Length: 161
Ligand SMILES: [Zn+2]
Image (cartoon, rainbow, N blue to C red; front, side, top):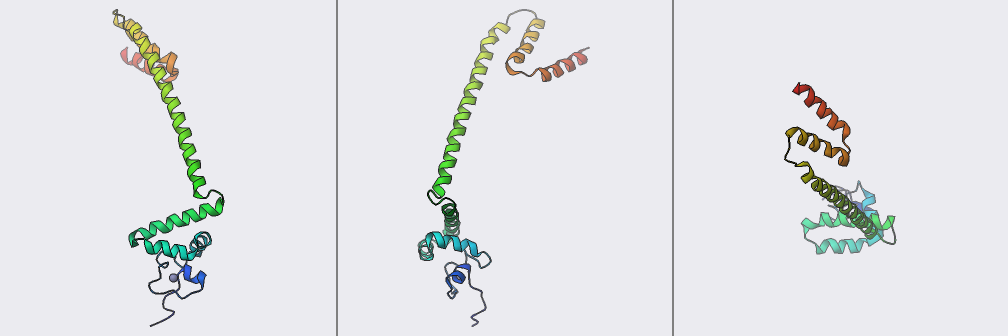
């Protein structure tokens, strides 16, 4: 059987050992991507990665490897916090955005309440003309859409005549 028939995986190449047919690293660390194993080896050590993979069912090993690679890159980038740094940065962003969202929702509620307060004033049992005019003018002062309402009023005027 040919010893050179299959090229060693990235792990065995780096560790300068013979890549066995059932090498635990071979499916996840192909020879064309040596950096992927180099970084996890630097951070976790080859024997620890081997142990982690052996303890896992085969169908979970791909996910475990990509997680280890992600964590290793994060650790090299940020030696103090590693991926925890990224997690807390994102958690801060989430809570900041949640606060902004709460403020925006409160503003919407305020505007809606102002709008509702004025509704009884509009609903005066009088002629239809006055009602139409007033309900049309309301959004002007609160929502600042003068241009679009002007377009609508011009269109309805021209079609009406
Ligand atoms: Zn190998």
